Image (cartoon, rainbow, N blue to C red; front, top):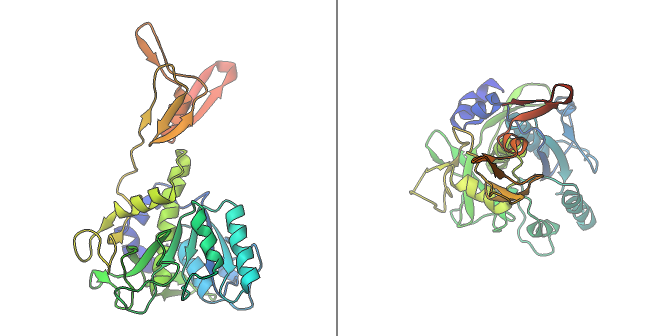
Length: 318
């Protein structure tokens, strides 16, 4: 963590989740942006599946904010602005076909007509999009204006409200910090402002949460990710949702989400946080006691289970 980011990381719960070991590990993120070219500070963690552009700029800064918030995540960068229609379709097709957990779009276009990004509407991948920096109360840039994205505005800590230039609108979901620091190509800490920074800040926070979800075998839908955000926001303006701040400043919860496991005697289908899971063996009763599959329960709670065959012993480590 860059020292300049410490206070905002503490307030948003990022520092706490990092201390628990959830840093986005195993989470695959696509950065759909412009000017995506690696520098020496990115060589160990950034990938460019479809190649780099000639200059590094906006997309590089977006990726660096993501890495600062979720250093364990897999971050793939794509130069969308500047690509022709065929190139854009190739990017979106690659994302759809290669199992990405999150897509960050810190850019805006005027409308959605014939825009390849629209294809993401028909997937279940959460797409986090910057609202834009025109300072308009009811104007979200596309794709943030679409109901299939998670629209993010920028938060001003100084005034505890949306940043002056941050666009608002009915489809705005939340606010994220801007003015977040990252390392430039010379290794110096510099800040990045606007909704283009706020969006990857939120995407990185979601990656930390998803690394926990992966550990317990829970894959939230796009709608469930939206619900998670709306239920973990601090009001900045009016109580509840409003055009300027959405649901408010998104923060990660202070405790890990409870895991609810439901099993029925004699049935090989259980649910974990409402999701159906097939069991190897059904629960049963014996001598007035209920017997349940311990490996399934333990792993659903995030534990590691080992069976030592020669000793016929089971080890469970939380």
